[in-house]
Image (cartoon, rainbow, N blue to C red):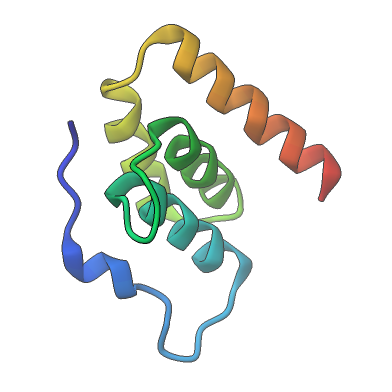
Length: 88
């Protein structure tokens, strides 16, 4: 499983409210289990969307998370991200 820098949990909180930062935070929440159960499918989904919105760090973490996922889990994460993108 990928390792996450605990300091990244606060990334983007110093007055920054860009959409990519918020989406990155959702990915970190699910990847680390902060205030929820660890959910790699949800983490990948949010990192993927944040990466599409321009977050380079989200793209890196998306790859790390994907390395620990099965093909069906990865397919679900990609479907969920596509669905979210079409709705927003």
